Image (cartoon, rainbow, N blue to C red; front, side, top):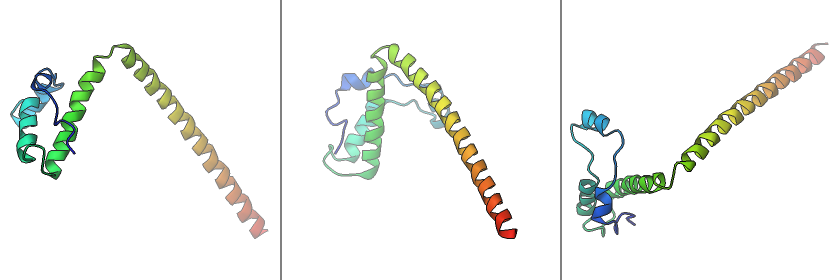
Amino acid sequence: MYKTKDTKVKDLKTVEIQNQEEILVRTKKKLDPLQAFEVIKNESKGFSKADVKAQEADELLYRLLNRDAKSTSGDTSKKKSTVKKELSVEEIRIQERERARAIELLEVEIELELNAKSA
């Protein structure tokens, strides 16, 4: 039910928060993963009660913890992901052109049908 139930305190303390300055400006508080974990634990009565808000917060905290684990795997994954993004943008543009051509063909077909009916 709760993904962060077995998370260790030392793991929570080592989480690096990106954009901490922006969080501080918007909420007037820094984001503290340990404090978030404690709130989730308290709201869910020790991870035993199903609470929608606590489960949503648990999911977000879990993603934050796993994001850090993924980012330490190496810089090669970052390079691969940027290549994938560039390819996906190129693929999207190709798809856009294909759709535009299909629309143009449909317009021509409709125009030909209308001309054939009026003749």
